[in-house]
Amino acid sequence: MAGSGAIAALLVAAVPDTISRLVYFAAFGSGTVIGMLGVSLTLSVLVRLAADRGARWATILHLGAAAGSVAAGFVLAQQVIAAP
Image (cartoon, rainbow, N blue to C red):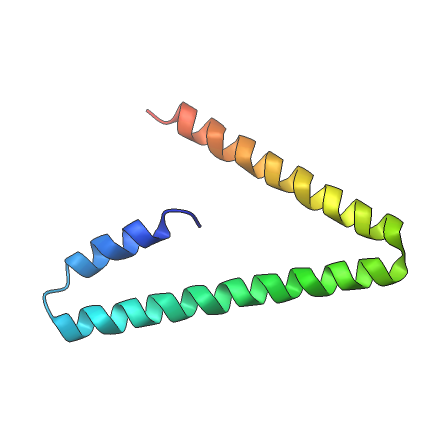
């Protein structure tokens, strides 16, 4: 989701009305906050459930999340490098 603020700024720049710009920014900001809250709550519930089952499950979950993040980073880097 990095860089979505720049896209929002470009879209708002195309809107000539000031009130419409403010409404768009408010909607974008609210959606961003709600989306991040949902992801954070989901992950916190998963970590809590894993921790209740034992430290081993929590460690597996943390390592899996880290490996997934690294894999996503490699995929994104490959797409940027391969872009014409």
